[in-house]
Length: 349
Image (cartoon, rainbow, N blue to C red; front, side):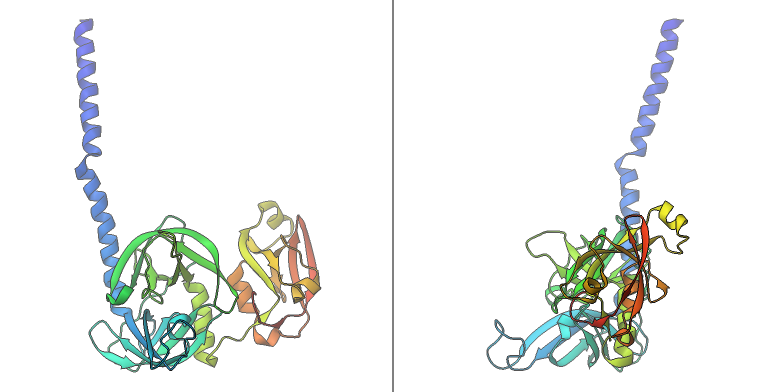
């Protein structure tokens, strides 16, 4: 009887192992891979009609040393239509100092583009073409993305049009130094493969929503690529379309977004749960003169609460230059109000 019971238990355990093995069999893996593939396909199909190829010609010696010594230099990049009436977002370094800009749309048409505005401080630029039947990409919210989530890059690397690569969001809140020396904050790091020519193309979610503008790679490394967050781009685009440039003031810091301790939020009854930690301070800057220190967390500026770099950048407009304004900071556990007089933007925020 006991032997029979053991035999039955062993048989049941064997069946359980077989069932578990079936669940983790290649057939189950294929289902996961099919879902992943479908997400990439769906996202690329949604955004690809908005992605454009940009061909740029530069005048004689306009690109400086290392370029063609005579005649015209040529370069290329990517961009994407973000309004149905032909506004295109791309990188500043793709079109800066361009003599002529030609844009190719997915259906094969080519148009000469007008440079609406250029902002080297964030490596973003806006072009415009006058063409019918354009499809605009859907812009997402870069604040809602999380490390590890799927992302897809679309662009024209090395002239191969409409190339799609997929990866994950590797990190958030990175900083890159622009060609002007200013730090570009809130940059997205991804391992979706980027190459020369991808610059200016969209980085999108599995739903096809644009969360970033592909901008740079670290050439000696593999799988380290960067995109400007679309929330930063939205702010920059508004200034470029309105004035042709982004007008800014400066307080002379480099910062990064950090969460606030819950006790500090409750104790001071703050409406924000994060702020801008001062990473470095420029010598002889408004921040230095106002007594800010590295490690201070900015939670308010000019009477408006600040939850991150984007909020602070939006407040540092040209009309703030030379005006004494309150700046609220958390230093250790103490909330302090200082007064600061922003100057003209020269480097960091």
